[in-house]
Image (cartoon, rainbow, N blue to C red):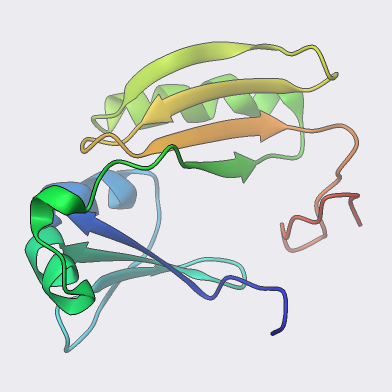
Length: 141
């Protein structure tokens, strides 16, 4: 198995509200014929899919889908980019969970949740510089 994540699917209750949130972050919406609203990322895609249909696909009742302790990280090139991105998420309908601040390991981060509670970290990691096209690698490019 090659090391990659191709598609991250969020089972969502309100497709249009969630799509509007990500569009307000300047992500480009792609409509699909199978009921997914997709946002192509660098090397992956974030898909929004109705929670009930996702549960049905998996073969679980919605109540068993649970809430995982998962975060998604959006890394930026400079420390100065973190706070404005958090502010943009808040204006779009997100909730700030941790304002931009220094962290013990030398980075600068903040957290927000989208309208349905999915948690995003906005991070500047001075030890993992991004590639020219914005791709992330743990030890940088």
